[in-house]
Amino acid sequence: MLRKEAEGKPPKVEKIAALNKFLRIIYARIKELYDNMALAERAKTKTRSKTRAKTKVTA
Picture 1: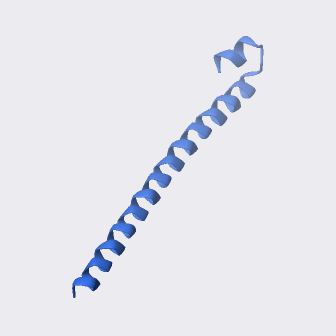
Picture 2: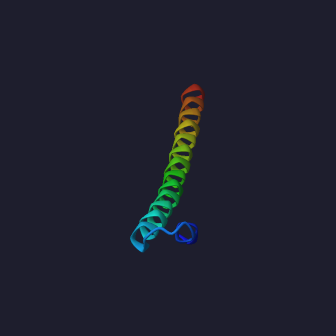
């Protein structure tokens, strides 16, 4: 926002630029969170599959 102000942009343009940057940061954090949750879920599924396979062999 300060950079846009230094460029002489109107206050509305400054605010929109700052909000767009904020939203991009928030979206990236949320996406990262969901990606990590998906990886953890896949790891659980793989672990369960291996455990079930071992159980079937020993049973």
